[in-house]
Image (cartoon, rainbow, N blue to C red; front, side, top):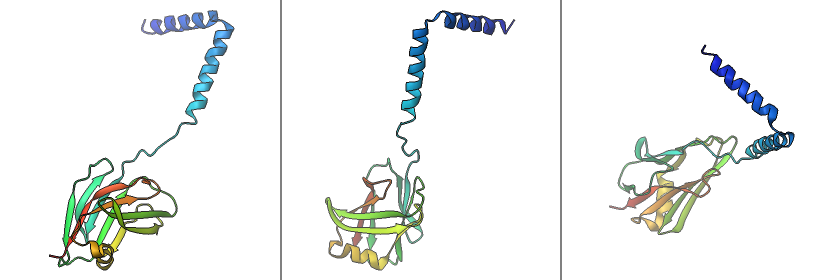
Length: 167
């Protein structure tokens, strides 16, 4: 008795299809084909959230993801004993070489752009202490906005604010 409901539905569908006009069948077929055609040209975007970590030596000082709002500030004193600043960023893997950028800005003005080619999109950006102090140069003691950009994040992903102090 359980299958009798399916049999009745099946008979009703066959009955309905049998009495639909040929022109209506053609219209339904064209509608179905056009939906399939347009859906195959749909633009597909990344389905991965970009996550990042900013480290001084091996200590995580800032971390977040592409939907996190700006506001975190890290302060480094020039007297602090550190070797490097490292940015680990993980998102959609890009095959082949990729150009990655770390932009330093102050009040919307570009101070410096660190650009490097990488073989993997997940390789870290590492800036030595000496390079970092040279980058900051005359803008020491000023808050610098750090922004990451590459082929996937062409608009830039703001990571936070960096202040290097002399005292």
